[in-house]
Image: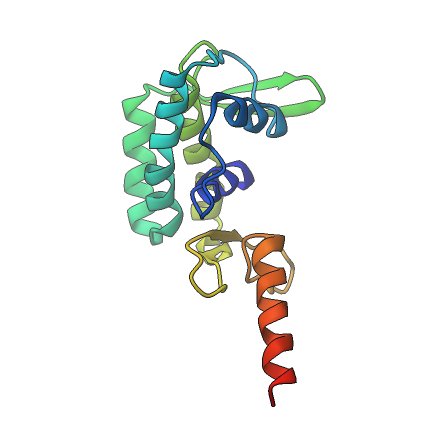
Length: 167
């Protein structure tokens, strides 16, 4: 889920997924394995998945189930346990030679299954920062996270400070 949220949040201005190099950085940061073409076409496909992921992350539980099932069927997903690098056993839904955009969607759908089954959809919420369209994945015990990034946290803190100084 962290990866899906991070990918969706690349859309919040300024867009931080506009070049093949930025996609390469995302691929490495989030420990993706398998096929990675490093092309403009692949970048366009991954960028297009962001809107679909955003729809999933903002959906209610029943709508999320419909999207999850649709995406898994579309990809003819066959969940498998895999281990690679420093990452212990986890589930992949498609082979590593499938397109990166498809793997992102399927793996995000599989991760969302856990939130649906545990009835924890409230862990996903919109960023509380004014004007931000980002998504927050709140994994804190007391569900206190409200901002999608440190940038939004800092802007809100600065605005609150300025408001206090003006009173």
